[in-house]
Amino acid sequence: MSQWFNLVNKKNALLRRQMQLNILEQEEDLSRRCELLARELRLSLGVDEWRKTPGQKRRERLLLQELLSAVNERDRLVQEMDEQEKAIADDDAIERNLSHVEIQRKNNCILQ
Image (cartoon, rainbow, N blue to C red; front, side):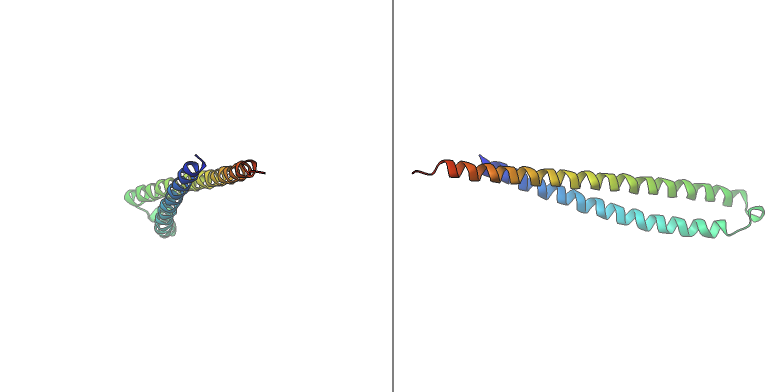
């Protein structure tokens, strides 16, 4: 029975690691997107307000909204990564407990 628990635990650990890698990939994509948005926004903010056309002002607002959205998404991914790390720590604790129980069971079964 403990072997089955160990296998399930290892499978869960692999799935969690895969999820972490996916999160890291998404976070990297968002980081690049934030850099591009921030660069374009800096260029727009460098222009005097009275020189901007209504289209440029709309674009600036849109860039700000997109940047805020990307930052919020990155924050969500960081929280998700934290949850995955906590789950991995919980899985490790369960595995240690199962190992401890298995050792005790073997010690109790010794013929004297």
